[in-house]
Image (tube, rainbow, N blue to C red; front, side, top):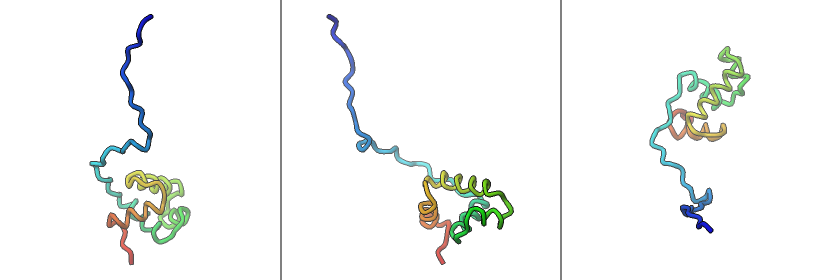
Length: 92
């Protein structure tokens, strides 16, 4: 009877794992993304932003998705909070 030879594995739960440190800062926004961010802050809907800037709703959605990815957020509230904290939006 052969003996099983193997490395012992340490099992960790997801709660024990820490994300790698972020060394890279978020990319800066393009002038168009900044413009759309300010319109989002002003309370405009995607359709209204598209009409105002003469671009399609899909293009507005793409810009919004790109901003959220760059700023590493997953919803509009986080996007606006992050923009305020990062100095991209001024509260009047």
